[in-house]
Amino acid sequence: MFAEKLQEKGVAPKYILVGYADADGLKDVNDTFGHDEGDSLIVACVNVLKETMADRGVIGRMSGDEFAAMLFTSDETECEKMKTKMDELIDAYNVKSEKPYKLSVSFGTFLFPYSPDLKILELLENEDKQMYRIKENHRAGRRRGDVIVNDKKA
Image (tube, one colour):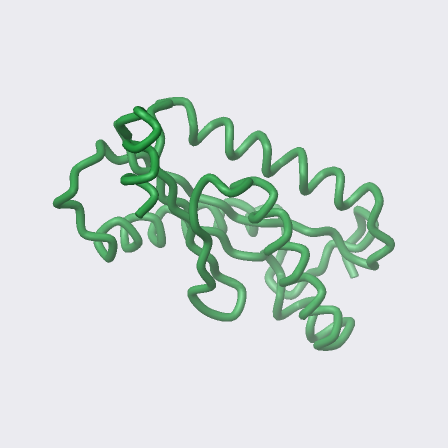
């Protein structure tokens, strides 16, 4: 659908960008601050993803705090642009948020050469593996069970 819309505008997609996002620390936020705050964390993550995508693709919730995103592009630097935009939005959220915890999102992206024969499940499996590697890197800075509260551990 999105590829066809691009082609109608005279832009042939060269790549499919697939992203996989996971809200870091959801269980810890639920356990420390309650499920209403956990829900708020998920909503904040969704809002960051929606603003990052800006109607250029599609976002779907895969499970509790995991999301997938996909867009067609002709820009081979799109992955870095999305990560930069997401980091800026997360930083802005954390500066103005009055929440007792920081929003952190593990986000893995991969750019595939466009082909109508690509299988979406294969793309998502690749992204899921990359996202978990990123998530483990985020966790390396803190013990499991720690919640970052105003730059301190709770």
